[in-house]
Each structure stands twice: as C-alpha cells, then as structure tokens.
Image (cartoon, rainbow, N blue to C red; front, top):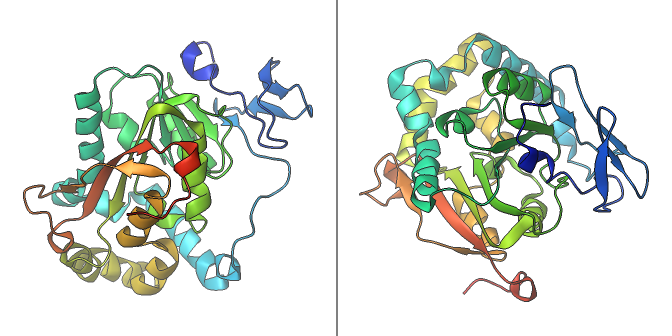
Length: 297
C-alpha cells in the first residue's frame, strides 16, 4: 500500500454501509467511525469497499440460466483474450472512445486530484493515461487484481457504481469508458457521480453508438459468429441484457445532472453520425444541486 499516492487514499471517506463520511485509516485498511464497518485490502492489494448487505435488487433475468451461461462465456473469453482486442483493427475501433477520453484529459492538463475511473475493468483506459495519480473502481475482483499487477501505483477499489466510498464533492475528475450502457440503475449511478464530483469537477464518459452500422457489422462479422460458434449464444440476446441503455437514453438522463459539452465521435470525429462511428465521448460538468432534477431543455 505504500506505493499508492496518499492523495488517492485520502479520498476514501464515505462508508458504503451507513453513508457516514468519517472513514479513517485503520489496521489493514479503513474503519467507519460511525458504524464500525471496515474496509480491508485483499491479498492482491485491492481495497474491498462493499456494504455488508446488497443494494438495489436487479431483475430476475440477471439470475437466469441464460445469463449464467453468458457470464461463464465472458470469463472464458477474458482468460483467452476478448475478440474485440485480438487484432489491431478490432482494437482501433474498440479503444477509440478510450483515446478520446485521453485527448480530453490532456487538454485539461494536470488535475487537482487523482483521476477516478469508474468501471475500470482491467485498466484499458488507465493504461493509456500513463503514471498519473489514479483510482480504479470496479465490481469485478478479477479485473481489479489484473489491473493491480499492471499499475501497482494505482489505488484499486472494489465498489458498486451506485454506492461509492468517496466523500461528497471530493473528486475533481471521474472517467467511465463503455460502462453507462450496462447500468440497469442508470439514474442512480449518474446521481452518485454528481454527488462525489466537486462543483468545478468533470465527468468524462464514453458510450457506444448502439444501433449504428459499425456495431451492426461488428456483431454480424466478429462477436456474433464467435459467441454462436464457441458458446451457442445469440449475440442479440446477450446485448439485450448487457447494453441495457442506448446512447439516447444515457444522454437524456445525463442532462438532468450535468451540463454536457458537444459530443466527440470516434473513430471518425469529422463525421458526427452515430451510424458511422463506434462511440460518443462527452465531457460533463455537474449542474448546481438545486437544478439537478430539472428536465433537459
């Protein structure tokens, strides 16, 4: 833990059990001064910041036999190497949104605090950012363990997107690459990002241009055949659960909490059409609290 930036550790203040913001360093991690809940670092150096009781209940299809088969297939593909990263052309399209976030961060210059990547996975985005002060947050412990081996200086936190261990208004920069489309409780997630961001903070997120020509071709020619051949799964059924939010819904809800700058399309930023791109990247500034639930103009 000594290699982790102290500024990153100082942001761990909110208890995900009781919501109190008096977490303090303790033996092997942190302890809530209000309820006594403890966060500990596991053997991989990942801080476990999960509440003692589960949060919002997901629909039953997340507990179906079909979804269990998909999760097994996903674990196998991650271990073998996910198809969307196995060739240079695939990586070019799959990481184009990540590169747009990096470009936006470079334009900002140094941030006042660590960059917090929400839904960081195994660190694809953080890997593009170099040795910046960073915190990777994800629910998947295996991903976080892999990230920790790649970036031992980064603080890695196992936590729920909707229940983060950061104090209110404490973060200057949050990022999220290809995560919001997966959140069943999307509004709750956006509200949580709004809570943790400082008034002058920024939220940079990338979402897929679901329904466009690029995604349709990719599923017909790449991911669809692979899932059908190796796992007997239909890609459309999988994506009906995985990509629960399309770009239009994400942007409409995001406008209730943030002021959105003009979207940047990728990989063809000079052609601002969803049908010909794979992702949209947005820089979002938090709206004042008294305006956060107003309908978008």
